[in-house]
Image 1: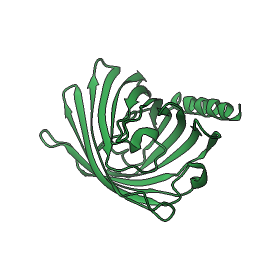
Image 2: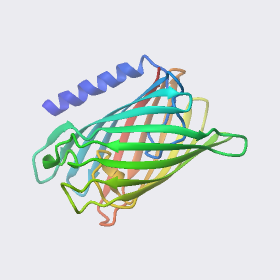
Image 3: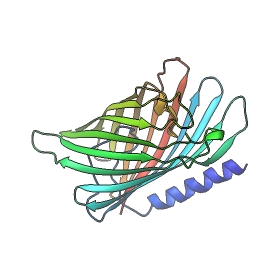
Length: 257
């Protein structure tokens, strides 16, 4: 009952945020895009993920992510994941998981021919409880290159990155490569179809549930409720080396001050 009350309270808070501010959508994609906030602007993403792996294991992640534009071409961001796990053979656990901090810079703006190119440097902290599987117990550091290109009604995103994984608590974890290809297609002035194929080369800890699978296809929609609000929902499937059944649902909103 306590976990349900926390989830409901957080969803209400996220909804109230969404009802007040403007938005542009990067959610529900895991792939990085080349967009930045712009100087003095603040962007907020709020989302709720459900994931099921194997026959019993479930997880619920509520994520608040904020980004602030420190210049016209760069921003600073933070991700605050509240993770709840319900293992099939153990006790339920819930608390704030590992926080992520990032700096992102637009290297080349989009032109008539060339795509926009951005660089993102990020750090994952070790504040989560590693003993209860709510954190890795170590810091990770990574770098991501992202490209975005508009082709009429279609916007394409691609990224490639590398993460150095801390192994002080678990020496079985490995550094990993991440890669993604995503697209947003405008079905109407308000509705976009979003699709993605996202992958990471090795298993590691991440509150994003299915992100540690080798490949994660995603399909969903974003809806421009008005000029100030964008809502989204998507379904994703994990494809892992062990071939366990894994799937997830995500829903949320993006806002911009």
